[in-house]
Length: 250
Figure 1 (tube, rainbow, N blue to C red):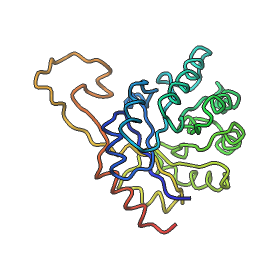
Figure 2 (cartoon, one colour):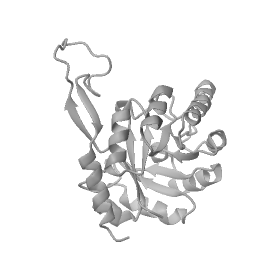
Figure 3 (cartoon, one colour):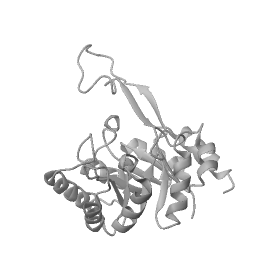
Figure 4 (cartoon, rainbow, N blue to C red):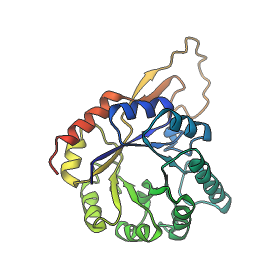
């Protein structure tokens, strides 16, 4: 299996930068400060029109936990249809039961709704109570890959479990490390896990070009992100990660 670097992108700009830097795929989402939610139909269509890269669309109706109501699940189903209608190659999603187990029934339904698009189960996996059983549940549900930090704060901290997950999966499902990956730790992570796919944002922040700024008013939680700080994919950071990976003998 060839090496794949997936970039988490929330704009046409970040998607085009990721493609130009050599990424093999993007996870398209919005509201990254909240951990990501489903992007608009307009954004999906625009990214598809402006890139030739594989696009996996995040299906997450809100921030917070991964225990969803029937109405939220209905929204997720329709969002999958919209993603497919606008040229997505796959979806990224995750649903848990209240006891921390994988919601196998609903995950299988989402995989069915998405077909022939693939389904990646995102880092909700890192909140499930039993990682080894979680792998078996997701294989049974029809997931193609699992995005995980190894149930740790970051992928580098979860290296040991990620390596075990790859061993347990035995090629039946792709294990893709993600969480705090950058050009400074990718070499150590790759050497420690032997993974063939990696997920990162590769972003840099920049100042807004607004010259008038009214102080003391925030459109969101100022602890998460200021309106005047923008973040987007950085070609140099992404290409550095890819270059390091290509230099490693697996």
